[in-house]
Image (cartoon, rainbow, N blue to C red):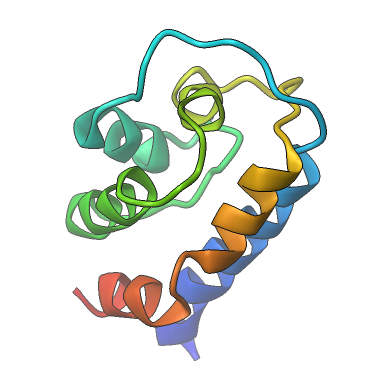
Length: 107
């Protein structure tokens, strides 16, 4: 049961992020995998995933390699609770493979 908790946290966080994807904004480039990983490990971040460094690195790479917009990824890094992305981001979030996230949780 404990083994599924991180996967459930990822799923819940993806759902929360999907709710934040209403309207896009302008940004300053795609955040790095390291920046995303740090955000995923930050207890105060809107994503609040509580991942280990290894898990966060893996999830960050999946997000970085996805079609999620630079702006949405930057909102995660910036912990921007007021950010609203677009429909394309919602589709991109849905396309992040559950299998790849599960692999990250096992690592």
